[in-house]
Amino acid sequence: MNRLIYHSEEGYNRGESPFDRAIRETADSEEVWIVCPFIGPSYVKSILKGVDEWRIVTDVEAWIATFGEESQGSIQEFIEENQERIHDFPDVHALSEFFIKNR
Image (cartoon, rainbow, N blue to C red; front, top):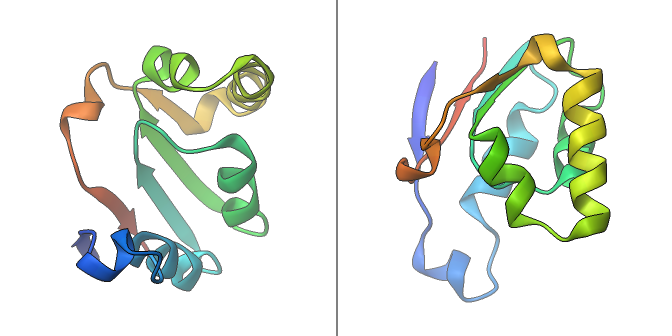
């Protein structure tokens, strides 16, 4: 099942983020695809822990540039370790949705 997820008003007012809720609900799925240009390296590692099949589609240069030096190194290392699972899609930040595919 595929679905688009949008922020709700309460998500912006310190309520539970619909993105985080959906991510956590699918993190134990057999397959997870994430299309998101700006996701923190520690967060992405935490949600993908234990997931056998996953892919990330992102603008790699924008992803790295968004974060500070410490996180930039962590992102670069993560990308190098998972090159076959991370797909560079320049300008993906034009998409405002976070896409999760689970089966």
